[in-house]
Length: 415
Image (cartoon, rainbow, N blue to C red):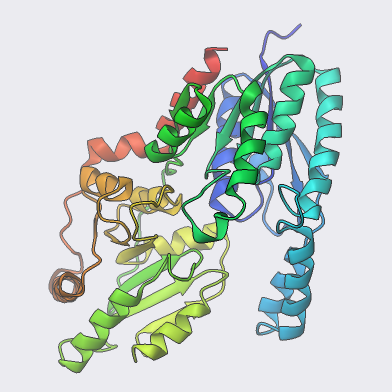
Protein backbone atom coordinates (compact mmCIF):
# COMPACT_ATOMS: atom_id res chain seq x y z
CA UNK A 1 0.00 0.00 0.00
CA UNK A 2 1.30 3.49 -0.91
CA UNK A 3 2.41 5.81 1.92
CA UNK A 4 2.06 8.87 -0.28
CA UNK A 5 0.03 11.74 1.17
CA UNK A 6 -3.17 12.53 -0.73
CA UNK A 7 -3.92 16.24 -1.24
CA UNK A 8 -7.14 17.67 -2.67
CA UNK A 9 -6.65 20.96 -4.55
CA UNK A 10 -9.71 23.02 -5.43
CA UNK A 11 -9.22 25.98 -7.75
CA UNK A 12 -11.65 27.52 -10.21
CA UNK A 13 -8.64 28.72 -12.20
CA UNK A 14 -6.38 25.97 -13.53
CA UNK A 15 -4.64 24.95 -16.72
CA UNK A 16 -5.30 25.06 -19.58
CA UNK A 17 -7.12 28.32 -18.80
CA UNK A 18 -4.99 31.21 -20.14
CA UNK A 19 -4.34 33.20 -16.96
CA UNK A 20 -1.50 33.77 -14.48
CA UNK A 21 -3.69 32.38 -11.69
CA UNK A 22 -4.05 29.10 -13.59
CA UNK A 23 -0.30 28.91 -14.18
CA UNK A 24 0.37 29.45 -10.45
CA UNK A 25 -1.88 26.63 -9.25
CA UNK A 26 -0.97 24.24 -12.09
CA UNK A 27 2.76 24.55 -11.48
CA UNK A 28 2.37 24.01 -7.75
CA UNK A 29 0.32 20.86 -8.42
CA UNK A 30 2.91 19.56 -10.85
CA UNK A 31 5.70 20.28 -8.32
CA UNK A 32 3.90 18.42 -5.52
CA UNK A 33 3.08 15.47 -7.79
CA UNK A 34 6.78 15.19 -8.62
CA UNK A 35 7.54 15.19 -4.88
CA UNK A 36 5.65 11.92 -4.43
CA UNK A 37 2.38 13.39 -3.23
CA UNK A 38 -0.83 12.18 -4.84
CA UNK A 39 -2.71 15.29 -5.90
CA UNK A 40 -6.39 15.39 -6.84
CA UNK A 41 -7.57 18.58 -8.56
CA UNK A 42 -11.09 19.97 -8.93
CA UNK A 43 -11.44 22.88 -11.33
CA UNK A 44 -13.88 24.53 -13.73
CA UNK A 45 -14.55 23.07 -17.16
CA UNK A 46 -14.39 26.12 -19.37
CA UNK A 47 -13.93 26.67 -23.09
CA UNK A 48 -10.35 25.43 -23.57
CA UNK A 49 -7.98 26.09 -26.42
CA UNK A 50 -4.62 25.28 -24.80
CA UNK A 51 -2.83 21.96 -24.51
CA UNK A 52 -3.13 19.76 -21.44
CA UNK A 53 0.52 18.69 -21.17
CA UNK A 54 0.88 19.80 -17.57
CA UNK A 55 -2.02 17.53 -16.49
CA UNK A 56 -0.30 14.25 -17.30
CA UNK A 57 -0.36 11.77 -14.38
CA UNK A 58 -2.50 14.15 -12.27
CA UNK A 59 -6.04 13.28 -11.20
CA UNK A 60 -7.83 16.30 -12.63
CA UNK A 61 -11.61 16.67 -12.39
CA UNK A 62 -13.06 19.32 -14.70
CA UNK A 63 -16.48 20.31 -13.33
CA UNK A 64 -18.94 22.01 -15.67
CA UNK A 65 -19.33 25.78 -15.44
CA UNK A 66 -21.71 27.85 -17.65
CA UNK A 67 -19.84 30.71 -19.32
CA UNK A 68 -19.51 32.65 -22.56
CA UNK A 69 -15.74 32.42 -23.09
CA UNK A 70 -16.21 30.76 -26.48
CA UNK A 71 -18.42 33.62 -27.69
CA UNK A 72 -15.78 36.16 -26.65
CA UNK A 73 -13.07 34.21 -28.47
CA UNK A 74 -15.24 34.00 -31.58
CA UNK A 75 -15.92 37.74 -31.45
CA UNK A 76 -12.17 38.46 -31.56
CA UNK A 77 -11.74 36.13 -34.52
CA UNK A 78 -14.49 38.08 -36.33
CA UNK A 79 -13.03 41.56 -35.85
CA UNK A 80 -14.67 42.08 -32.44
CA UNK A 81 -18.17 41.28 -33.73
CA UNK A 82 -20.53 43.52 -31.72
CA UNK A 83 -23.44 41.07 -31.69
CA UNK A 84 -21.31 38.25 -30.27
CA UNK A 85 -19.79 40.60 -27.69
CA UNK A 86 -23.25 41.81 -26.60
CA UNK A 87 -24.55 38.29 -26.01
CA UNK A 88 -21.34 37.15 -24.32
CA UNK A 89 -21.36 40.11 -21.91
CA UNK A 90 -25.07 39.69 -21.18
CA UNK A 91 -24.56 35.99 -20.44
CA UNK A 92 -21.56 36.60 -18.20
CA UNK A 93 -23.33 39.42 -16.34
CA UNK A 94 -26.09 37.01 -15.36
CA UNK A 95 -24.01 33.92 -14.74
CA UNK A 96 -20.65 35.18 -13.47
CA UNK A 97 -20.98 38.56 -11.79
CA UNK A 98 -22.53 38.98 -8.37
CA UNK A 99 -26.34 39.08 -8.32
CA UNK A 100 -28.78 39.67 -5.44
CA UNK A 101 -27.21 38.43 -2.19
CA UNK A 102 -25.15 35.59 -3.64
CA UNK A 103 -21.38 35.71 -2.96
CA UNK A 104 -20.84 35.30 -6.71
CA UNK A 105 -22.79 34.97 -9.95
CA UNK A 106 -25.27 32.17 -10.66
CA UNK A 107 -22.85 30.26 -12.87
CA UNK A 108 -20.13 30.11 -10.23
CA UNK A 109 -22.66 29.03 -7.61
CA UNK A 110 -23.72 26.20 -9.91
CA UNK A 111 -20.06 25.19 -10.24
CA UNK A 112 -19.62 25.37 -6.45
CA UNK A 113 -22.54 22.97 -5.88
CA UNK A 114 -21.27 20.48 -8.48
CA UNK A 115 -17.65 20.75 -7.33
CA UNK A 116 -18.66 20.09 -3.71
CA UNK A 117 -20.46 16.91 -4.79
CA UNK A 118 -17.39 15.78 -6.76
CA UNK A 119 -15.11 16.53 -3.78
CA UNK A 120 -17.19 14.32 -1.48
CA UNK A 121 -16.80 11.43 -3.91
CA UNK A 122 -13.03 11.93 -4.06
CA UNK A 123 -12.76 12.02 -0.26
CA UNK A 124 -14.93 8.91 0.03
CA UNK A 125 -12.59 6.97 -2.30
CA UNK A 126 -9.23 8.36 -1.14
CA UNK A 127 -7.53 9.12 2.17
CA UNK A 128 -7.35 12.91 1.76
CA UNK A 129 -5.06 14.35 4.45
CA UNK A 130 -5.07 17.98 3.34
CA UNK A 131 -7.39 20.27 1.37
CA UNK A 132 -5.81 23.23 -0.43
CA UNK A 133 -8.06 25.82 -2.08
CA UNK A 134 -7.08 28.76 -4.26
CA UNK A 135 -9.37 31.81 -4.60
CA UNK A 136 -10.89 33.81 -6.27
CA UNK A 137 -13.56 33.25 -6.84
CA UNK A 138 -14.42 32.72 -3.18
CA UNK A 139 -16.38 29.56 -4.03
CA UNK A 140 -13.19 27.49 -3.80
CA UNK A 141 -12.76 28.60 -0.18
CA UNK A 142 -16.46 27.99 0.63
CA UNK A 143 -16.13 24.41 -0.67
CA UNK A 144 -12.94 23.88 1.34
CA UNK A 145 -14.56 25.19 4.51
CA UNK A 146 -17.56 22.88 4.20
CA UNK A 147 -15.34 19.87 3.50
CA UNK A 148 -13.03 20.68 6.41
CA UNK A 149 -15.99 20.92 8.79
CA UNK A 150 -17.68 17.78 7.48
CA UNK A 151 -14.62 15.52 7.40
CA UNK A 152 -12.46 17.19 10.08
CA UNK A 153 -9.65 17.54 7.53
CA UNK A 154 -6.86 20.16 7.60
CA UNK A 155 -7.55 22.97 5.14
CA UNK A 156 -5.32 25.72 3.76
CA UNK A 157 -7.15 28.47 1.84
CA UNK A 158 -5.04 30.55 -0.55
CA UNK A 159 -6.14 34.05 -1.52
CA UNK A 160 -4.45 35.47 -4.60
CA UNK A 161 -6.52 38.62 -3.98
CA UNK A 162 -8.50 39.72 -0.96
CA UNK A 163 -11.99 38.22 -0.80
CA UNK A 164 -13.37 41.28 1.00
CA UNK A 165 -11.47 44.29 -0.29
CA UNK A 166 -12.83 47.67 0.87
CA UNK A 167 -10.15 49.66 -0.95
CA UNK A 168 -11.48 49.49 -4.50
CA UNK A 169 -14.53 51.79 -4.96
CA UNK A 170 -16.63 49.09 -6.63
CA UNK A 171 -16.27 46.86 -3.54
CA UNK A 172 -17.36 49.33 -0.86
CA UNK A 173 -21.08 48.49 -0.93
CA UNK A 174 -20.58 44.75 -0.54
CA UNK A 175 -17.72 44.84 1.98
CA UNK A 176 -19.80 44.49 5.15
CA UNK A 177 -21.76 41.59 3.67
CA UNK A 178 -18.69 39.81 2.28
CA UNK A 179 -16.51 40.16 5.38
CA UNK A 180 -19.15 38.40 7.50
CA UNK A 181 -19.32 35.49 5.04
CA UNK A 182 -15.51 35.42 4.89
CA UNK A 183 -15.14 35.22 8.68
CA UNK A 184 -17.65 32.38 8.96
CA UNK A 185 -15.94 30.51 6.12
CA UNK A 186 -12.36 30.86 7.39
CA UNK A 187 -13.29 29.73 10.89
CA UNK A 188 -12.26 26.22 9.78
CA UNK A 189 -8.95 27.21 8.13
CA UNK A 190 -5.81 25.60 9.56
CA UNK A 191 -3.53 28.22 8.02
CA UNK A 192 -3.84 30.86 5.29
CA UNK A 193 -1.68 31.60 2.22
CA UNK A 194 -1.67 34.84 0.25
CA UNK A 195 0.51 36.61 -2.32
CA UNK A 196 1.68 39.91 -0.74
CA UNK A 197 2.84 41.08 2.67
CA UNK A 198 0.20 43.79 2.66
CA UNK A 199 -2.56 41.19 2.26
CA UNK A 200 -0.84 38.95 4.82
CA UNK A 201 -1.24 41.65 7.48
CA UNK A 202 -4.91 42.24 6.62
CA UNK A 203 -5.79 38.52 6.66
CA UNK A 204 -3.80 37.82 9.83
CA UNK A 205 -5.38 40.75 11.69
CA UNK A 206 -8.88 39.80 10.50
CA UNK A 207 -8.81 36.05 11.16
CA UNK A 208 -6.13 35.66 13.87
CA UNK A 209 -4.57 32.73 12.00
CA UNK A 210 -1.05 32.00 10.81
CA UNK A 211 -0.73 33.52 7.32
CA UNK A 212 2.11 32.94 4.86
CA UNK A 213 3.20 34.79 1.74
CA UNK A 214 3.90 32.71 -1.37
CA UNK A 215 4.63 34.89 -4.41
CA UNK A 216 3.57 33.80 -7.90
CA UNK A 217 7.17 33.39 -8.97
CA UNK A 218 8.66 32.95 -12.43
CA UNK A 219 9.60 29.93 -14.51
CA UNK A 220 13.04 29.46 -16.04
CA UNK A 221 12.78 30.45 -19.67
CA UNK A 222 15.05 29.90 -22.64
CA UNK A 223 16.23 33.45 -23.34
CA UNK A 224 18.59 32.57 -26.18
CA UNK A 225 18.27 34.02 -29.66
CA UNK A 226 16.52 37.23 -28.75
CA UNK A 227 15.49 39.22 -31.79
CA UNK A 228 17.20 42.61 -32.17
CA UNK A 229 14.62 45.22 -33.08
CA UNK A 230 15.23 48.21 -35.33
CA UNK A 231 13.70 50.44 -32.64
CA UNK A 232 12.96 50.31 -28.92
CA UNK A 233 10.01 48.02 -28.15
CA UNK A 234 7.99 48.47 -24.96
CA UNK A 235 5.40 45.73 -24.36
CA UNK A 236 2.49 45.42 -21.98
CA UNK A 237 0.69 42.10 -21.54
CA UNK A 238 -2.46 42.06 -19.45
CA UNK A 239 -5.77 43.80 -18.88
CA UNK A 240 -6.50 47.51 -18.60
CA UNK A 241 -8.57 48.73 -15.64
CA UNK A 242 -9.71 52.36 -16.04
CA UNK A 243 -8.23 54.69 -13.40
CA UNK A 244 -6.11 51.86 -11.95
CA UNK A 245 -3.93 50.63 -14.80
CA UNK A 246 -3.28 53.81 -16.69
CA UNK A 247 -0.37 54.51 -19.09
CA UNK A 248 -1.31 58.21 -19.52
CA UNK A 249 1.96 59.55 -18.07
CA UNK A 250 3.94 57.46 -20.58
CA UNK A 251 1.80 58.67 -23.48
CA UNK A 252 2.07 62.29 -22.34
CA UNK A 253 5.87 62.00 -22.08
CA UNK A 254 6.12 60.65 -25.62
CA UNK A 255 3.73 63.31 -26.93
CA UNK A 256 5.90 66.08 -25.47
CA UNK A 257 9.14 64.49 -26.68
CA UNK A 258 7.62 64.13 -30.14
CA UNK A 259 6.56 67.79 -30.16
CA UNK A 260 10.08 68.74 -29.04
CA UNK A 261 11.38 66.63 -31.97
CA UNK A 262 13.44 64.46 -29.62
CA UNK A 263 11.76 61.14 -30.54
CA UNK A 264 9.70 59.81 -33.43
CA UNK A 265 7.77 56.64 -34.23
CA UNK A 266 10.98 55.37 -35.85
CA UNK A 267 12.61 55.32 -32.40
CA UNK A 268 10.02 53.61 -30.22
CA UNK A 269 6.87 51.45 -30.30
CA UNK A 270 4.56 50.55 -27.42
CA UNK A 271 2.65 47.29 -27.87
CA UNK A 272 -0.36 46.24 -25.79
CA UNK A 273 -1.69 42.66 -25.67
CA UNK A 274 -4.84 41.64 -23.78
CA UNK A 275 -8.62 41.30 -23.59
CA UNK A 276 -9.40 44.87 -22.51
CA UNK A 277 -6.62 46.82 -24.19
CA UNK A 278 -9.00 48.34 -26.77
CA UNK A 279 -9.38 51.17 -24.23
CA UNK A 280 -5.79 52.08 -25.09
CA UNK A 281 -6.79 53.32 -28.55
CA UNK A 282 -8.79 56.15 -26.99
CA UNK A 283 -5.85 57.24 -24.81
CA UNK A 284 -3.39 57.03 -27.71
CA UNK A 285 -5.56 59.35 -29.80
CA UNK A 286 -6.13 61.68 -26.85
CA UNK A 287 -2.37 62.20 -26.50
CA UNK A 288 -1.78 62.10 -30.27
CA UNK A 289 0.62 59.15 -30.04
CA UNK A 290 -1.39 56.59 -32.01
CA UNK A 291 1.52 56.23 -34.44
CA UNK A 292 3.61 54.92 -31.52
CA UNK A 293 1.00 52.53 -30.10
CA UNK A 294 -0.12 49.11 -31.33
CA UNK A 295 -2.99 47.13 -29.80
CA UNK A 296 -3.33 43.35 -30.13
CA UNK A 297 -5.79 40.76 -28.74
CA UNK A 298 -4.92 38.41 -25.92
CA UNK A 299 -2.29 35.78 -26.81
CA UNK A 300 -1.62 32.29 -25.51
CA UNK A 301 1.05 31.83 -22.86
CA UNK A 302 3.73 30.47 -25.21
CA UNK A 303 3.30 33.46 -27.51
CA UNK A 304 3.23 35.82 -24.51
CA UNK A 305 6.64 34.57 -23.36
CA UNK A 306 8.06 34.99 -26.86
CA UNK A 307 6.78 38.59 -27.00
CA UNK A 308 8.38 39.33 -23.64
CA UNK A 309 11.66 37.78 -24.74
CA UNK A 310 11.80 39.93 -27.87
CA UNK A 311 10.84 43.18 -26.14
CA UNK A 312 13.34 45.71 -24.82
CA UNK A 313 11.27 47.09 -21.92
CA UNK A 314 8.33 45.41 -20.17
CA UNK A 315 5.59 47.74 -18.97
CA UNK A 316 3.82 47.09 -15.66
CA UNK A 317 0.62 49.00 -14.84
CA UNK A 318 -1.00 48.99 -11.40
CA UNK A 319 -3.02 51.35 -9.23
CA UNK A 320 -0.94 54.31 -8.08
CA UNK A 321 -2.43 54.39 -4.59
CA UNK A 322 -1.15 53.37 -1.16
CA UNK A 323 -4.29 51.23 -0.77
CA UNK A 324 -3.21 48.91 -3.60
CA UNK A 325 -2.74 45.51 -1.95
CA UNK A 326 -2.12 43.27 -4.98
CA UNK A 327 0.98 42.41 -6.97
CA UNK A 328 0.18 41.20 -10.51
CA UNK A 329 1.65 37.80 -11.28
CA UNK A 330 2.99 39.33 -14.47
CA UNK A 331 5.65 41.15 -12.40
CA UNK A 332 7.43 37.88 -11.61
CA UNK A 333 7.16 36.65 -15.18
CA UNK A 334 8.82 39.90 -16.25
CA UNK A 335 11.55 39.45 -13.60
CA UNK A 336 12.22 35.95 -14.90
CA UNK A 337 12.77 37.37 -18.38
CA UNK A 338 15.42 39.69 -16.94
CA UNK A 339 14.32 42.57 -19.10
CA UNK A 340 14.12 46.16 -17.79
CA UNK A 341 10.71 46.78 -16.21
CA UNK A 342 8.99 50.15 -16.32
CA UNK A 343 6.40 50.34 -13.56
CA UNK A 344 3.59 52.89 -13.45
CA UNK A 345 2.16 52.20 -10.02
CA UNK A 346 2.47 53.17 -6.34
CA UNK A 347 6.11 54.10 -5.81
CA UNK A 348 6.33 53.34 -2.10
CA UNK A 349 4.86 49.83 -2.07
CA UNK A 350 5.86 46.21 -2.41
CA UNK A 351 6.25 46.31 -6.20
CA UNK A 352 8.79 49.13 -5.97
CA UNK A 353 10.66 47.28 -3.19
CA UNK A 354 10.97 44.15 -5.33
CA UNK A 355 12.17 46.08 -8.40
CA UNK A 356 14.81 47.89 -6.34
CA UNK A 357 15.93 44.71 -4.57
CA UNK A 358 16.38 42.78 -7.83
CA UNK A 359 17.68 45.71 -9.91
CA UNK A 360 15.16 44.80 -12.62
CA UNK A 361 13.36 48.10 -13.07
CA UNK A 362 12.01 51.42 -11.89
CA UNK A 363 8.65 52.87 -10.88
CA UNK A 364 8.03 56.22 -12.60
CA UNK A 365 4.87 58.28 -12.15
CA UNK A 366 6.09 61.84 -12.73
CA UNK A 367 6.13 63.35 -16.21
CA UNK A 368 9.62 64.88 -15.97
CA UNK A 369 11.23 61.60 -14.86
CA UNK A 370 9.31 59.67 -17.51
CA UNK A 371 10.63 61.92 -20.27
CA UNK A 372 14.16 61.52 -18.94
CA UNK A 373 13.78 57.73 -18.85
CA UNK A 374 12.43 57.53 -22.42
CA UNK A 375 15.23 59.73 -23.76
CA UNK A 376 17.83 57.65 -21.90
CA UNK A 377 16.32 54.37 -23.15
CA UNK A 378 16.14 55.48 -26.79
CA UNK A 379 19.71 56.80 -26.72
CA UNK A 380 21.12 53.68 -25.04
CA UNK A 381 19.27 51.39 -27.40
CA UNK A 382 20.53 53.18 -30.47
CA UNK A 383 24.12 53.05 -29.24
CA UNK A 384 24.31 49.69 -27.44
CA UNK A 385 21.13 47.70 -28.24
CA UNK A 386 20.62 47.30 -24.49
CA UNK A 387 19.82 49.57 -21.57
CA UNK A 388 22.67 48.66 -19.23
CA UNK A 389 20.57 47.51 -16.25
CA UNK A 390 22.57 45.61 -13.60
CA UNK A 391 20.33 42.76 -12.44
CA UNK A 392 21.00 41.25 -8.99
CA UNK A 393 21.00 37.53 -9.77
CA UNK A 394 21.18 36.34 -6.16
CA UNK A 395 18.09 38.39 -5.30
CA UNK A 396 16.21 37.39 -8.45
CA UNK A 397 16.51 33.66 -7.65
CA UNK A 398 14.28 33.84 -4.58
CA UNK A 399 11.38 34.95 -6.79
CA UNK A 400 11.55 31.84 -8.95
CA UNK A 401 8.53 29.57 -8.92
CA UNK A 402 10.73 26.69 -7.78
CA UNK A 403 11.84 28.68 -4.70
CA UNK A 404 8.23 29.66 -3.90
CA UNK A 405 7.00 26.08 -4.36
CA UNK A 406 9.61 24.86 -1.87
CA UNK A 407 8.29 27.37 0.66
CA UNK A 408 4.76 26.09 0.10
CA UNK A 409 5.92 22.48 0.38
CA UNK A 410 7.37 23.21 3.85
CA UNK A 411 3.98 24.55 4.95
CA UNK A 412 2.24 21.40 3.69
CA UNK A 413 4.81 19.18 5.40
CA UNK A 414 3.82 20.72 8.73
CA UNK A 415 0.45 18.94 8.57
